Length: 258
Image 1 (spheres, rainbow, N blue to C red):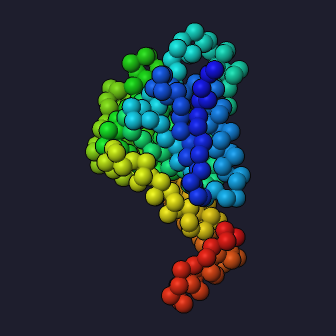
Image 2: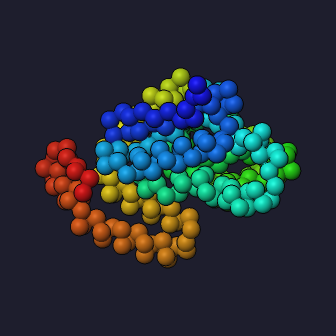
Image 3: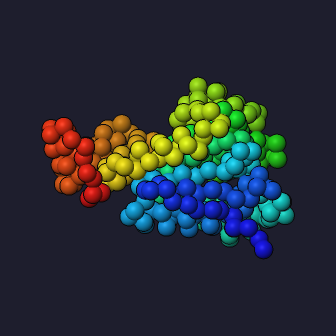
């Protein structure tokens, strides 16, 4: 019986989605991306989930797109099938915080999937690369767009044009990842981080995520205006008033995610 392409488990208010094609180094085929997209949307719709973690295994977060599945595709195959857009971009619809926990290789599409998450926690063993140039291809799941925004044009050009691989320390130094942890502590550290985030007011988390993403995609003045509206909206939130009153009373707030 064929293994499920992903595994989903819940820890309190955190959902953990594990990519589960170990024999293929978690290569990202359509079945896996369909399952991942469905799981992400289910978590996003679940009021009891406040944060989502996507992870792989010790050897690979994901070694990229499944080249064996793609090798004979034609232009019409990918155009009519809406390749990438149809299922890889489902993650863009998720409003809750999504954290990538990366150990081992995050190559090509695997690196792009990690970059599509809101934060990357990297094990010391993590390796990041966009080596599509070696196949006479290009990073087409957001790599040429997200990477320059994350690490700047010069470093992004180097990685995309030469296929250069970054280790975890370089990725941290360039700003590609949020933090680096000991490899044996990756799961525990990421779950602790996700649980800490998920304990905050969900509407506030969603507003922050949307505001930071707006900074990537708009001018400063437009972004400031959007942020200001989000701030004003917090005063309609039960949680915001609870948080302020709890602070004044020197007690821990009890958020109801409203």
